[in-house]
Image (tube, rainbow, N blue to C red; front, side, top):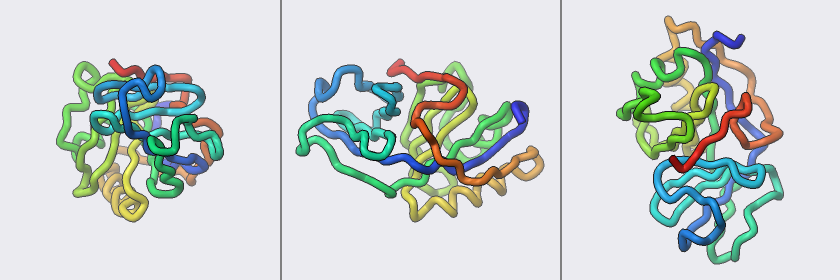
Length: 172
């Protein structure tokens, strides 16, 4: 299935919002992008704000005043394969060419009228939207995948929030 275009929901992750000074934790991205840090994926969402995807119970160790648990608040989807950018380009108003949006890039945008975060990993893209929009976004991705050979996989628990195939992001 390495050449297949696939869509799956990634489950089994907790989410935590971090907000505060840039030196809250060393290594946080300071502009649009994401980093792998201490077994978690940290996505810059706005100045002084980050979304952390991590294993259950492994929330970042920062002061309570700078941390908000978001358990179950987001639907995380992974779109992988050689035609993933082509499919997403039909739904997103951002340039997904690798020169403009390389591995390690992240953006807050709209896709099929749904507010979402999108970040590029080596195997494709991950998207996070509010859970209540998850089904709508999934349906839009399936519709955009018609004629492109999209295969919808069963939801998969993620043992690790890092990207598949060993890819790593950067604050780039």
